[in-house]
Structure formats: C-alpha cells, structure tokens
Length: 309
Image (cartoon, rainbow, N blue to C red; front, top):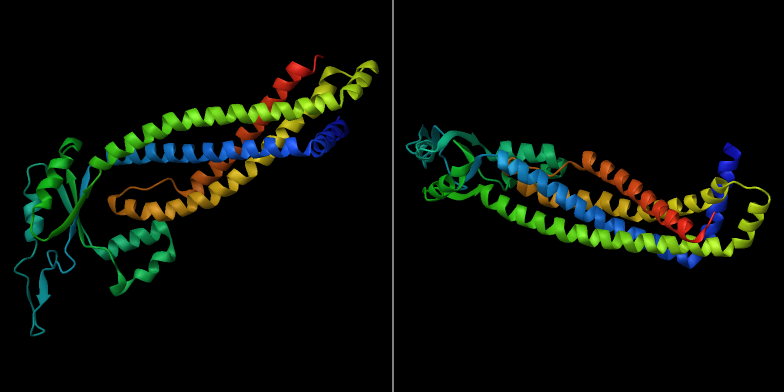
C-alpha cells in the first residue's frame, strides 16, 4: 500500500511537469490569493487584539518636558550645590487631584527604554545613556474607561506637560479600519480563492483529458475508482502546497518588519502587537493548510465534472 501511494505521488509530480504553463498559472493564483489572505488576516487579528488591549487599558500617558524635575526631591543649583526642589511633584499633585483619577505612577525614561529593549530587542541599546530619546512619564489610571478622554484633556492643560496619549481615539480609528479591512478583505479573499480553485480545476481537467486513454485502460483492467482519483487529488494538493511557499516567506519577513516599525509606538501605551515568535508560525501553518485545501478542492471539482467514474 505504501508502494502504491508513492507511485501515485510520483504520477502527480509528473503531471505537474506535463502541464507546465497551467501549473504555473494555478500556483501563481494560489500564491497571490494566500498573500492577500495572510495580509488581511494579520491586520484583522492584530487590530482586534489591539482594540481589546486599548479597551482594557484604562490609562493616560503624560509625557513631561525634557528638562522636567517634577519627580526629583533635590536638584543641583547653578553653584553646583544640592538643594531641595521647590517644584517637587507640582505636576503630580495637579494630576492626582483630578476627580476621575484613580492612581498616578511615575515612569522614568530609563524604565521605558528598558521595556522597549525587552519587547523590541537589543537594537534599542544604542539609546542608552544621554542618547535616550524618551520622556519621563506619569502613567495615570482613571476610575472608569468613559472618563479617559476628559482626564486627558484636563491633564494636557497643565504647565510642564509636553503631550498626552490615551487609547480612546485610537480605538475608534482602529475599529473603523478593522471593519473596513474585514469587509473588503473578506470579499477580495473569497473572489481570489474562487479564481484559484477555477485555475486549479482547469489544470487537473487538462490532465484528465490528456490521460483519458490511460484512464480507459485502467478501467478495463479493473482499477478501482479510488486508484484513478488519487493522483489527481495529490496534484491539486501539490499546486496548493507550492503556492503557499511565497506567501509564507513574505509573511515571515513582512510581519517581523511591521512589528519592529509599529510596536515601538505602542509599547509606551502598554500595548503590543502579537509577538512574531507566536503569531508567525501559526499563520504560516494556516496558509499551508489553506493552500492544500484550495488545491484539493479544485481537484475534487474537476473529478466530479470531467471524470465520470
């Protein structure tokens, strides 16, 4: 039985070679389809993940001026002497005094750089010391999600605050973007899958027609239907498998680049995309599985329509 399977496998490979241009067209169609499916799926899944993170991340990030000493109890004066800081926690007291503020925690730019290095890799080590481009920050937890916007607007008016970031407006834009991608992406993916299945079915149909005499002989000598069908099913599976390779490679490198470029702006807000070490292998496995299913389905259609056995 194993010997028979390998024979069918070899026949399916030879069939791919015999129908060269049709095979290339079918493989290209699957590759293009799966590339777009991988892109849309990555965007939708990460958008939903980030939206959920923003929804549960009831906090405001308050960035202080570069020269801020709000969290320093002592400072060095012009004479080089260490003296008490008269402006110690002036901004902190104004923020914590707001009615809808639950908790205020100071986060130094060194701490934030450490978080970035942990999540983004050692490439951020070049910003150690005086090269650190980040700001000292107050992380503000609000009493409930609904007041995040109003608290952010009040904090932004405080003297000594450079900028304020919060998840509210990002959530709205994220949901709009995700909904648009979900609708148009699903429609485009379905259309492309249909085209891929059509091309694969045509490839297998041409193979069936070219081997019609051989199929008739196999019938005459008593070959079972399953024996005749298997090579065509394997051929479709090969087309789907080959068409999955390019999308998998593009996803592997493309997602890693997107993660490095986008995630660094999300980490300070306590948000993150799905880690490539977790997300990429699952998506690649999904693309290969989908490719094989598309190829096999195309073969089944051809066998049902053109192989009356």
